[in-house]
Image (cartoon, rainbow, N blue to C red; front, top):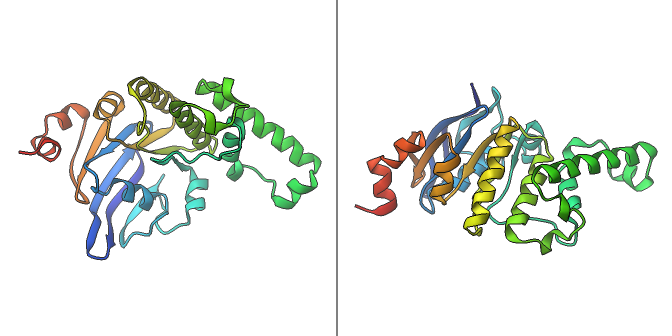
Length: 251
């Protein structure tokens, strides 16, 4: 059963049709990749799904409910988390504190209650700290819990970003170029972490340029070109698709 269903989605920027009549689904428990050249519409599609952009037409259903047009924080609260191509950690905060921030939609304490340090807010903060540490342990970065996240190696920062997204308790995780800026070893580690996340029961939709990573971890791949879907199939079939090869390599 599809957890995410996108139907005939359109987005124009002036005369540019960035996303043109795209339809696809993401099955529960799957890792699905979206690939295509720069400017194909991949990140725009992510922004439409997460509410950062409004579509001109079409629908997005998450677990059977339409979510297009809703605010990004409402979509996040429904169970969709995302990361970005450019790592967006909070500098001046530790690794643990960065992950704890990701729990804010799952906490009850508001600004005033936190300022007054009411007993129940202290108890909640202790719980959030413990749950965030569990995520750091899961992604094997607990040793850096008290280190300024900005000082970590690039691959470790990417793992912190994964952990912060997981703190939202998503059912669907959108990863925008998780291997961007990583070396070969870090990319292999990122692939292992993504697979581990899927094994937790979290569905993964990712945009990625690293074809070795995509072919290694994906259950299904969708290919975009100039805002249109040109192929959607299992990795082996995509590798052998003549149109896909032409787009990437030329005639």
